[in-house]
Amino acid sequence: MTDSAVASSKPKGTLSWALWDWASQSFPTVVTSFIFGRYITDTAFAPAGMSEADAEQYTGYWLGISGIISGLLIALIAPIVGRRADTSGRKKMWLMINTWLFAGTIGLMFFVQPSNDFFFFGLTLLAVGGIFFEFATVNYNSMLNEVARPKDRGRVSQFGWGLGYMGGIVLLVMALWIIQFGGAELLGIPDTAALSVRVVMIISMFWVLVFSIPLMLNVPEAKPIAGTEKESIFAAYGNLFRALATMGRENPNLLKFLIASAVYRDGLNGVFAYGAVLGGLAFGLGLTEIIIFGIAANIVAGFGAFVGAFFEDRIGSRTVVFVSLIGVMLGGLGVFVFAGAGTIAFFGFGLFLCTFVGPAQAASRTMMSRLSSDDKQGEAFGLYATTGRAVSFLAPAAWTVFVAAFSPLWGILGLMLILVIGFLLLITVKPVLAPKE
Image 1 (tube, rainbow, N blue to C red):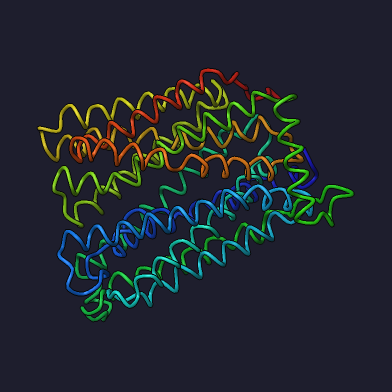
Image 2 (image 1 turned 30 degrees about the vertical axis):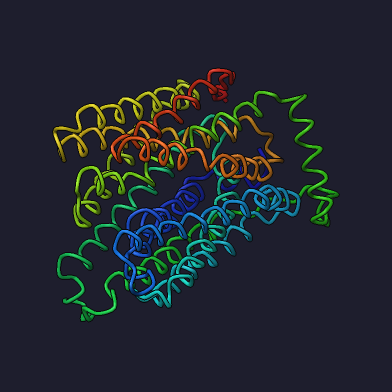
């Protein structure tokens, strides 16, 4: 371990690092999944005169286009973001800069009023915020080896992921109170122009800014790699391609894991991305019920991650991922098979499924850290983000094909198919266990 790793592996530094998961959860939970992502697809954002069906198609189409564009930019740039953070020794600096930038985009979402005049402004903020969030995550994940001893990385990774879900719960409860249960009126927020939703964006911005301060103050900056501090962007791309070629020869297990994890992580992301859509289209849930489901989903996912913290370093990250993927697939199958039971099936099997999402994601982060050398963590997690984005069309495509061919309920089977493929690819990856010392 590096000197900075030894220093920041103290409990104060480790907790400060994990609190960034808590802080940043406002983007995937409030912005992407449950609040702003649904708000921007409201028919109020479509051009005047469109039928409701055409308006839904219009907003959904442009949301997909913006996601593709931002995904391509992330795939192209993320490895260099990570590599340059490694070589320059500025992981924390770039983490904080990107954190402030995506927090700023969340704050600007307050100005997105429910009108077609603000539609593309909102989409741009969503896409740009997603890019900055991904870049921040690359640097954050690459710091895992600096805040945890090798034998504790699984526990620390799971703990951080669990904290993230807990933060999502608090945010969603506040949002539900403000939007649905009288909080807006109590706070003096007028019931016009979706102000209650837009105020939640301001709260989410300050949430990110405040709870990211401990990491900035208590986690030491990494040291640069000697002789590479002034590597140009063009040189970085050239060295990256050479590193990939070397990886294929010298560390094929890491390359296999990058491919396998990219596939099953896309399936896991699809579960959360389309869970609310499935609840609305196939089970007739309203906004309040969907937010309640989101709160419950974060509770059980956080619980699963905290449980995973006790086991991962003992039984290995790959085993945790295997067990978790099986749990997710069984839950998804249960939602489909027992759909006739209605909301009970969606909540019951859906929450069972969500219990395993956190452990799978956190164990994947740990496994990536252990398969990569300590001096190339940023580059490795940049590739981790890139491979994930490179196949990010899989879950949406599978969802769309199954829904178009059958019905919205069948979309869940499309997502499960992606998970099965990722599961089979993971079998080819050799396990890596935590060192005893």
